Image (cartoon, rainbow, N blue to C red; front, side, top):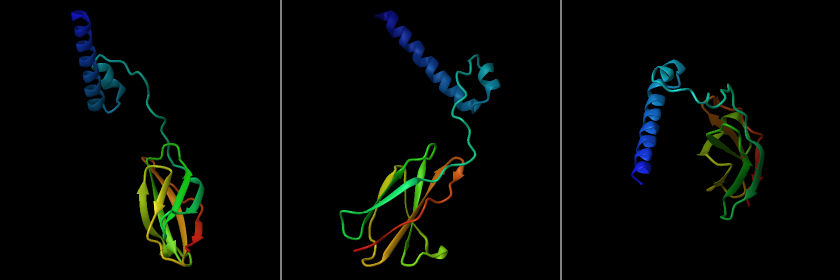
Length: 140
């Protein structure tokens, strides 16, 4: 039992040391090797751009004046931005509605009888994607 406790203490110490070396080295292989550790894996694949959300679907929400949006999640996306335009769609009428980290959202407070249009973009460390296709519904 004492042996197992000592082994666990050594494992924990090595994990803490590995975290410290990773933080200080910022992934630089030379610094990791100088600390007496090996580089186990290269980490996530680098990418230069991010794809827009696809297959955007729109349904009326459960609450009057609300819309339920859903889309296929995008690989490497950390967040999605949703923009709304009420009435006739023109480039200057788009306004931010909300940001989310999941592939669906409910937008509330939309005016009755108006056409509500939505477009979505993906956000990642690579930047902002182009917009998704525009989806629209006339509010009841």
